[in-house]
Image (cartoon, rainbow, N blue to C red):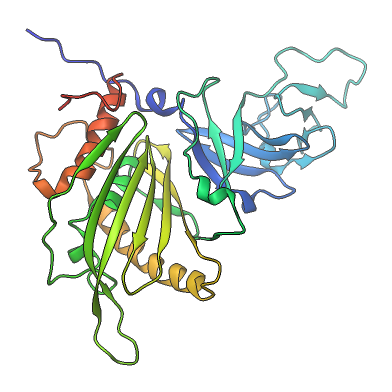
Length: 338
């Protein structure tokens, strides 16, 4: 009898990856709260970069988000204990001449600022680098626009699956860009990579009519580049609309709740793109949210036996196979995994 492989706890599986916890523009001169995989964090800026530490002061449990930034570090609003970026307490005003207790320190985490996001890794040693999106490094050749954070009652994996699902476009997105008259999904290939997946699919999207004209079919090439565990770059190459690229990164607050950081890059000469994107994409994602929050279980499924997959589901199912492999301690690109 073959023993079933042991499923790793959700937090243990994904704690060693980088996850976004805030847009960079949200973190100013005051501490900012964040939550990742059930861990309450406080983010703050220092002269040498972003710090991410435990949210509550080890002295008496005060919320450090109510504290203040000083040249020395983060000062607690309750008793003025001050912490360095490393988490070490460096000042106790009530007893300045006494040694600082060794336990007077915050748990600190790796933090980085990139692509307009604040990223955190809860493990001292990340198992993978940040996603590689080099086009975003050159701000002179591309402009970006972000949506407000998406806060959904579903898992990060569920959210990514719906982004990767082409077959739902004609039904969930009828009235936005979905084409209910042409729902067939042609056969397509999925490339497995060590840290992600890639696929290219052509979809007959509907482009809004102008001046009272009916919508026109816009054969759009969709190129998906997934970075495990919860990030995807989706390039749109339409024939009638503007080419652009969407980035969706789901951040797991818990196994059944996530926040998604969703933004786009486009040619800076397209002056009206940002307003159009925010308006149209907000409507599209609201359609997705209603479906995703209604799925059960909310947690990302580990078992396929209760579902009836078809050929058109290949990309989201390859993605799910990879995440299940990670939960089982296997490489995400391992062949022959079901």
